[in-house]
Length: 265
Ligand code: AMP
Ligand code: MG
Image (cartoon, rainbow, N blue to C red; front, side):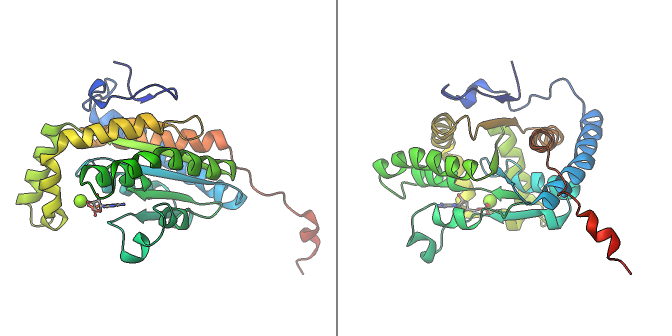
């Protein structure tokens, strides 16, 4: 199987075609060493993006509960200076947020130029959880695919690069992680009643993600399916994707004004 994959736009994505346990033949030690190398490089690249202050990046992390969104953020934060990072978690919308269009809170959370935003959940909740829990009628969530594509295009044209990552775990792996949360007093706080109820609707979530990833896999903001049963492989894939994105952007330090050299007394 060809993994991890960034699929060409226009092709339907079926998560069932992707192996969540894929590790490209690497073992944990090799993957962790490579992740550290990416993180070291990330720090330098993020610093250049910050100095250039003309473009921004948003890493979108989506995935079912326990897929590792928090852990992935920890890895990115271990490599990038906090002043270059802007982490935002999207919870169920507040009354104020619900009184606006669904993209209002997302647009407000887009980081300024020079910054790498990390979204722990995102506007994709509005076509996934909202659909599965039937929070809005079908024609409303269906209309949102086009709205999301137009929104992401607007941001892309304004100098924003999206790195959209779907953290793909198996149903068995989720069972083990939920079990751990149930037993470990340091993890129990993460469990809410919704998490176990959502697991009952695994197939509905998978269908909603298949559709969201297929409908919103565009040339200007493609999706990446990240095999995430092995946390160390997930970390490697995301660190590598962000590094490659920044290398492609190749941010430059602003031109130095050499007249300043004469001004230091
Ligand atoms: P967590 O990320 O575990 O803190 O949980 C946040 C919860 O907020 C999850 O159950 C999400 O599905 C839910 N959530 C996030 N965005 C939305 C949204 N737009 N509408 C409804 N629920 C949402
Ligand atoms: Mg949760």
